[in-house]
Image (cartoon, rainbow over all chains, first blue to last red):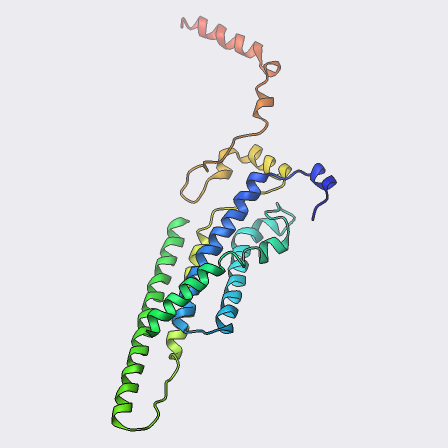
Length: 112
Length: 139
């Protein structure tokens, strides 16, 4: 967490921060329902489904990192997020409700 | 850029729909076979899990849609003030164009433009020269 002094020295643009996290959040809630669809088609049950969600959410973050963050930010370029935890784990709980919704729906549709 | 992501997403959606239909047919066939086996013999019916090709198709389709959606996200903006303002100074509106080729709605313009247009910074001699030429031309 940056201290107040650091924030005074290098201030942060709130609009850009909101824009970035909203972009990531939109992607995560959209893909979570997609993962629910495929988990329902595969017929996963109990822990398997949640592990599936966890693995594919991390894959989503990794792909997003590869496409949007890494090309400009690796060589001491601009920063886009406050910290690594916010980027990798911040959106896991976001899409869980949508995931469970479509998971149960498609499980019921395929195996009714 | 957007048409690439849209076509990839559509392709993945078709694959996923096909996988979903195949899984549905498979489970319907299973239940039909179980019912007929129970009526013919007293053997316990074996329910097989999903065939491997449907599993692979589902996972590949999910990955393709995921790729399309990630490619379709909007570009990020630097959060540090100095990097962000420098980008605006260098690129202007071109740095804030989204996928559809339009300038973002929340683009606020250069934060330093108020400094540049102060009256002290007006080049009054240049304006006088331009006015003189305009008069000479008989405007």
